[in-house]
Length: 289
Length: 289
Image (tube, rainbow over all chains, first blue to last red; front, side, top):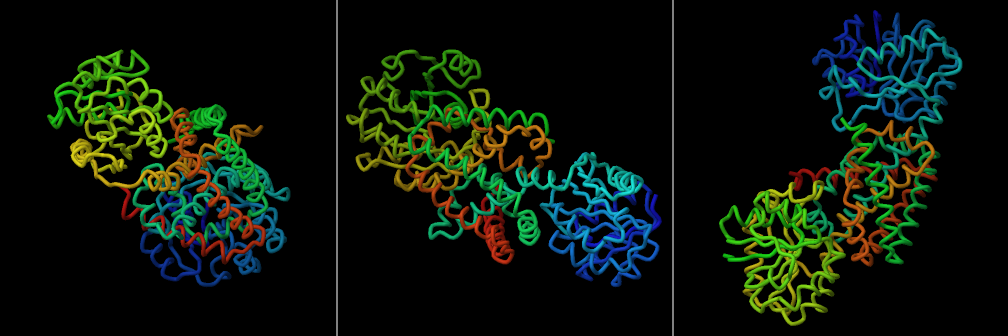
């Protein structure tokens, strides 16, 4: 399928993509490029990379596919650096958690290569990070959302789709705006809320006392507050319009809950909790792995 | 230790207390009383109960200990029904998730028995419910908070503490006000927030689309939104003053986060996320089982 692929950002996401394609026998040479030389060396020692590059001209020479797998805040500068060396036949995809900002960077820096640039977002956990966390089956059964450009060649979309599908992913497709709204609601807002809760508590004088009585409900609710600060900074900044809309919808819900508490309206609270509980348990039955 | 204990509300919490004391060989006869005859019969068949009572006079005759293990909304009416039959030597404890409201009910209905009424709150998960979920080791290593009355006999506190400790619990002690503030922060508010998030999403026209892209972060964040609506209605109503104070502190945090998003202030967002992430991961290292 591919003679030579280049991965920028060889952590959990980029490394797992390389391992999956290698395991499927679909790539000959995997080249890594990125900020940290040690990370790239580690990835080579782990068998994820065949070559480590420091220079975009060398890395991209004869490349079939480039995967951008850094936090989204680095997309524009990486694209700017890669653009002069991107050959006409090289497919490009990415693993960014937001898509309208990636589109903006693509139209700015890859305007000469729009036919072959097919943005994507793999929905795969990021509790662990770094190349040592990478594994060939990370994407098996996970969703990958493609957000193609109107300028894409149909064959480019097809080949990028096939690459992610070869990793075991379940493919779907959306516009970048829809993508960013959906993930603002079900991922970015929950992360923001969990970060906020822990931040608010840890700043208090009695934080130690509070934490010492936190139990399993707190543990699960705040798990995502342990996520990578830089990655989530980039997501929140990149997707802040959609995230603000979600936050405002949620603040309206909290204002309603606050009114019910003020009134001590047990009947309305119970009915709201029952609707939420039924929806949550139905979701878990259908979607939870 | 006990000849005869009476448990009102023989579900996960009450049933596990009975099984733990039985396993420790510290009780001869366990009597159950409650709203639903079928639940009590089930508990008898499971070996949790030795007797099923329908009448407080019969149940409490010669009892050493009464455990109240219903949702807190039922405390006052159950105490009113039990009060005329409560003998002078009978110890009373409860498993209510809130404590200032339990105090209010105790002073109203058990005013003649204050020496022996020692409120408590076992911090044990409630994902499953009913007598079939009960097990002898539910409380092993879990915290139980005692909130004694100023009127308590020291020996009464000691015996109630010993009973919970015999279930394997790690004992601590607080005022009811402190208790309700602490749990408003680390338990009641997270539940309210999770219920609110799922309620807000499930009411939308594109709820199906949103749910279909929700992944493991959403799963853990919303797990507690699957909790028992009646139990959480009672907790929220009973503890609404402390909960409103927590909600308002959290709304202030969200207003700050909203301002950072509006300004696209990545530096401040990253530093807030880093503080939260460090605190959350330190907590998990210290407290998570």
